[in-house]
Image 1 (tube, rainbow, N blue to C red):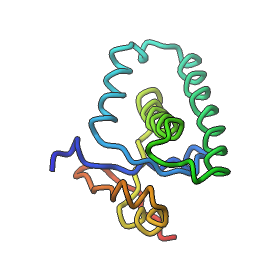
Image 2 (tube, one colour):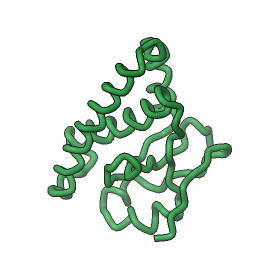
Image 3 (cartoon, rainbow, N blue to C red):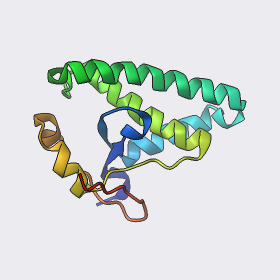
Image 4 (cartoon, rainbow, N blue to C red):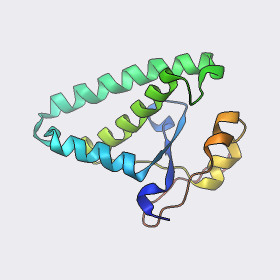
Length: 139
């Protein structure tokens, strides 16, 4: 399996978002390359923080919506798809702008909590990716 095509489960509760989002290395690499190409590293610290906070605030509102409407948190819902993309954007912005690690969930921890939903069962399990640390939660 190519590492860039391996699935990863992004741990979003670190940002106050109750969702774990599945993504892959190609998507993460694309976001990070886009930030470099767009010159985000040249931004002032204030510009970086304002952009990050704006994305985070928007996602917190969407997270609240999906917590109140879990039946709408499905792959064919455009709003849900945009929310998941936004979560990848937030995690990669945090990494690119501030040097914080992208937090991934260990497959065992993911399966113990996430597979109680039809959507998670449809998407599948995250992969362990050599050289990338993952968080393992025992609850």
